[in-house]
Image (cartoon, rainbow, N blue to C red; front, top):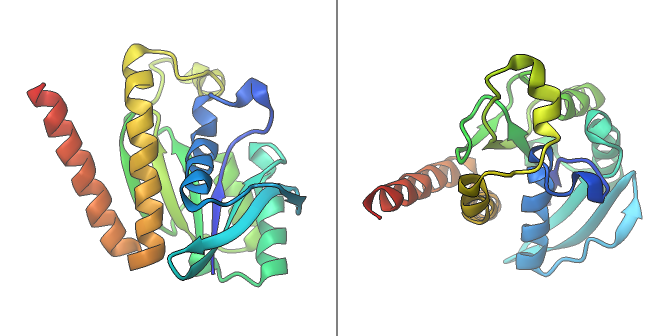
Amino acid sequence: MYLIIGLGNPGNRYRFTRHNVGFMVLEKLARNFEIDLKQKSFDALWGKGKVNSTNVLLAMPQTYMNLSGTAVRQLVAFFKADVNNLIVIHDDLDLPFGTIRLKTGGGNAGHKGLASITENLGSSDFIRVRLGIGRPADKSRIEGYVLEPFNSDEELSMLPEIIQTATDAVSEIVLSGTEKASAKCHKNILVNSLKKEEE
């Protein structure tokens, strides 16, 4: 079974903010896989289903970002999930907006949600789907920046495609593994970029 976690903050106030792009992708996955995120326990909203014949569990921690690991730890323990089959979808300040990268293991680069998960699991060997949101020019604005909604015309026009590409990448991880998913995901981003340049 794959345990797929989207990171974000609960509540309408944060629904469309940059920090919640992990939630956005998870909700898209739930629609695609016809999985209801109606279970409320383990400090999360979650639901179980299948991708083809592979069992998956989708979850959105409801603890706020910096305590995400509390929910993940409970889910991993109860469902006896393998950390190597844990996929975490999250925003990433170190990547330009529109960039998607897949990675297994590594540090948290100051991301409080990732730090909480690593601390609670005692391991960083999980798969990350990193969604670039870019950095503000003024570093003192980072905390406010991640809690702002996507607002430029360019961001809003690109967001559905980014979410779809990330959704496809997660599906490919489940079906074919991280290496093949990474190659396919990065190729899609390149093709889409070239299309935009030609328009």
